[in-house]
Image (tube, rainbow, N blue to C red; front, side):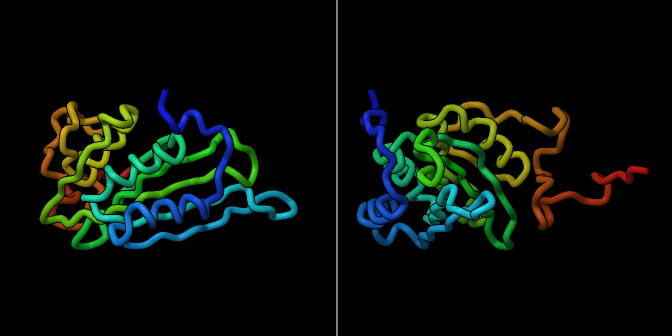
Length: 181
């Protein structure tokens, strides 16, 4: 049994922040806590921890999340931000802990367009496969050691040099867009 599964008590977002800062040091570029309120009384429903790290620290950071608790992976969101592709990995911790104790964790990684390669998390989180494949086809990010790189959303005959979410020359051209009435 994974040692995180033995930890039934939710820990605070500040504990997680301190734990990651201690373990990763300067590998973390930025770390920020955001409280999410809800309900009539606007009480804190959960906290988000936004962490920016280099792609070289991604696997180590995710492994540390597993040490702290069992992270539930949700999705990777991505964006073309100029010279880089921004990948946001969305997780939850302490999902059964109840209101005010759940933690959302977003791990942000900037991937330079001239080196669009990132380690895959597939061997740690098999359910990440479709998100990684989506980022590959839509933004052109190559995930190292991802076993299946086939298209998920685009047609089989799609030109794989065209990435629909890109805002540069590898994005959509007018021939890829049709007007709907």
